Length: 316
View 1 (cartoon, helix red, strand yellow):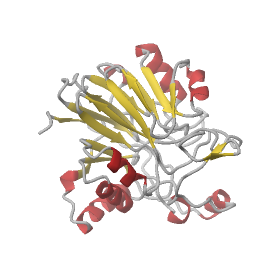
View 2 (cartoon, helix red, strand yellow):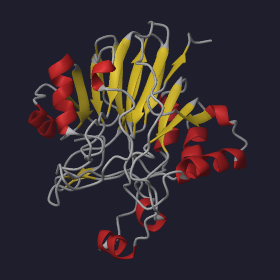
View 3 (cartoon, rainbow, N blue to C red):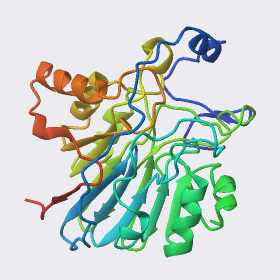
View 4 (cartoon, rainbow, N blue to C red):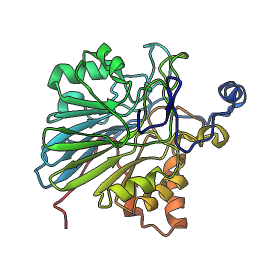
């Protein structure tokens, strides 16, 4: 018996309506993709320094990949340094901007968190490199460890929704999301998807990973009412008729920010891989408009430059 809805060998969403039959085919036949640049050259930033125990430091590598430092623990979130988010080296979504920091520039990785098994979040070549360099403690959702074994990771903690594990000096809780899972056409929803709340030294950070807008945000706020920071997706959302169940748009991300109690938020999951149909700069423009429409100060929900590190000092 799992906390996440589960029946007939497959996980389910608690709130989403079932996907329309033939949705993928209809999207492929009718999609109107905005033109993206083939390459974006970002200004380089210095490597992140090791944060102190009373600081929170977050380094944006790109897409949904962050190095989070909290309570003296360095946590790597959904790392992908590969050129493509794909099982193939020669096909599939290709990154238009390089990772913001080389893997070797990171000060250390104590904990590795993998939210779900999609290729843009679970990249086996990167995971092999992370394991070889640091051998961190690993946590993921139910059913995902079998994929991680292919990267040489044989000791991952598999978590159900709301289940927690202590890794070093941090407590990691796997929290619900509204999404789906698959790595092949034949394993749809055989593994669980979710986000993470990381707590250490009296501080807490929420990483939403991939999710549609749903009541989970209010549920997370009730259980974690003093979030210091939330990392929320703002990209990969068009067309809405197909993507709305699984990916928030920026307006919904602002609603999620409010549902969470208005903690400082950083947007992610945009401007790296062209996974859906919106323009590369559409998420940040729509985020600014949604913040203004809801009377939220831009400083409360912002994006980081690729490669940049932001440091939150001791709790006030």
